[in-house]
Length: 357
Length: 155
Image (tube, rainbow over all chains, first blue to last red; front, side, top):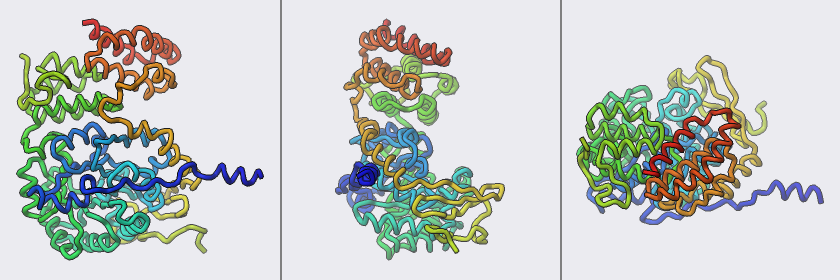
């Protein structure tokens, strides 16, 4: 009896949960494949940004016409072992869709575990094979993966074998070489054969700084090379305005365009605003307060980026980072600008900065 | 002979096609996810695996008791918060205190200033003061914030 009791104790309380059901509204693959036809533009995608792609920001991007949003990179090793890491990395709600959980991982076991845990709450899984941060690359995570092709293929194969079309899986890569990245194309072909649903290509090398322009020729080369595979490609890099999005799509033939830094500075860019509108800031503050849980330093960085993009007077930028809490931020906004809270008339409708003085 | 569960390295560590700064991890045990990674110094470090039982415990916690915290953050969710519930958590933990502060901020933002002030005066300030004593005055910023909020709510 004791042995049976011990065995029962070992049994999980839960049968594995199924992945979130996919419909035309939340299936990222359907969206990526159809936006050109249905909307006359590529799918608009907010890239994963370490620390910054949290729920409030994702919700803001969705509001301003971003079709698909990504979580920040979730380190699989931490996520499957530590509750605090999970809460810090991933929270969601009903409005947070379609959302892709992006995973940083260096082995298939951890990947399968994190996928199983998170798949009931997200619309797809992406593996980060592009992060150039040294600490991650040394662990074999991020950009290191593009030099470990067999492991990447194994990851796709294992996840797609287990879940099939119930779960969408993306691989986000950097290129190995400029202009004609043959090695990258070969890798992409293998990923397609393994069943990847779409590939996002950041047109920079592992060591290329973001100040260097993105290599659109390389992205085009890969897209042209994959034409027979029926696997869409998303172009990532240097998208700061809608005209950039149109230009990148037209040049490369990508099904979707991903922006990261562009959206950080102007979350309304895909809605056609070349500069961040004031209302976007008001809405961001509302989401932050309504959802809660974000550290003030992170919120201040978002506000700084948006105000800098709006070209606010420099003296205001200097003041922001000394604020200590959301209450202080609200007081500062309300004393210097005609700032509107949710529920007040003209909330989140302003375009220009409403200076008080 | 290889250990049980050990798999071949996906790519060799000294492969010429791999830049020096890049690590290709070697899976030592595919049941637990134990891997060996090469540090910048050249030393190989083993990243400990996680047994299936340990994993299932974490997974069940995520799907069970934590699921509301993870997925229940729809617009207006704070309207259902009960301050006594919040304060019943371990206030020595900063993240738990932050939830209380977030709720007060939410009340203040939505113009519920008298409710906010009342909660600060009757419940939060006494609790935080006590915790601050236990933490030997390490909550200066949080105490200052309560003061600021109180002043703002009275205006």
